[in-house]
Image 1 (cartoon, rainbow, N blue to C red):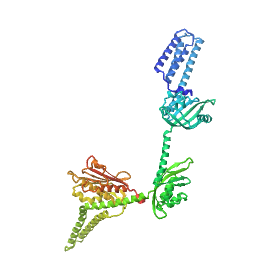
Image 2 (image 1 turned 45 degrees about the vertical axis):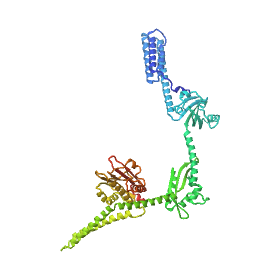
Image 3 (image 1 turned 180 degrees about the vertical axis):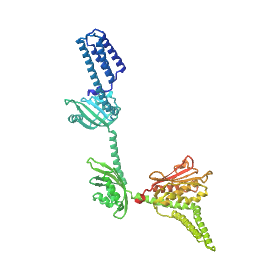
Image 4 (image 1 turned 90 degrees about the vertical axis):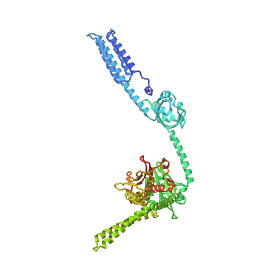
Length: 607
């Protein structure tokens, strides 16, 4: 491990200074070798030049220096001898060249080894883990950046220190046992407690490996350390949470159910027995659960058990139970997957009796429907003039067509074809009046919600016809933009019309005091692949910041004669159909009311 010490960063020599010194030495050696009568191998000293240049770590410079020294050696040999070369002089030149070549090769090999070692150490420094090497006397010989980040000491501070003393290590067992296992198996793994430089304690997961030399003697220990303090704290928090959960289950009368796979063995708490209405000696099983499951929900429950058997991470299901006394319970079961040390997959979860909640939700839905019906009746009263106009128009047309038919018949020669045309017009206008009356009766009728596929373009057109008289009376310029092709939503047609008519009437009232142009935009468009959007935009007084946050609150209104129920009912209807509604204030003025509904893509055929 001495190589690790040498490979640690050191203060490098200045390359320019070294180059200048090497050049000076080379010049001195050349002058002595070429211009003096000394009969010795002066050129051997060129190896000093090679070593100096090699110390900079620059491989190309080292190669260039080696070749330069070779050239100087040969040049000096030629200059210091006449044409008669003695064998001794030639031998000294050869020795010098051999020394230069050998030194150069060794220097280059050392540079390569040093570069490789430095790269390996840099890789170790890139690791997020704390990597520490210490000798058999516990003295630190290597300390990577991860160790510095974990413990707080720099490499310069840590090298040569006792690892256990510096970090105040506390082992789970006596240190002699740890050392004995390390010597016996060359491996050790465990959790330690250590103290950082700032005095804080950390819990460490440590993996140690023993390195032996070629003779088998133990020389050093390499340890990889990870901070698991956060995980320890998380486990403790989880234990506390589970304890709190157990207490909460007892207080809330929520049962617990555990299922183990692949054998399907189950465990129920006392509260689970009460919810299923089974005696305490009943053996918990999937068959027992299915026996209590409502017949219409059997496929759903079996499917969830199949998903759990396949390893689904989370189980979340609401279904009904058919009890022995004929009553029906609603339950909600939520469970998570836990893999035990035995290898079994176990779901541990809570079974909640939500019958009371579902009954309350159904009662709330009925109340909302009744309130919506009352609001529709009020709305029809406000639209009485428009409705009368829509009905009287086709009736007046029927009277006119009837009179024309009589005149055609009373001619000396009755005009049968003209009479038939007048009668056809009477039939058309009668159907038109009937359609208006049917729409009014549908809105006034008190009935349960009837979801069905609804053509949004058609619904928009019908709603406009019911309020057209109001639009004309207030001199409102109506613009309609419909989706092409038309979109279909699975909802209650009458309630959706109620939402749109309410938004239109609110827009009409918002523009009543506007002196300038009164423009109303009604649009239906596809928002994305899954939703349809309906927009009602007016050029009225707009929505103030003060009112924006309370616009859909119950009993909030800006009208002196308003009840504050219209937009609240609209929100309840839209959300009950799986959509959402909101208001915006565009920079151009006025107000924009938007609501979106899920697009029906064959869902209605699946229900």
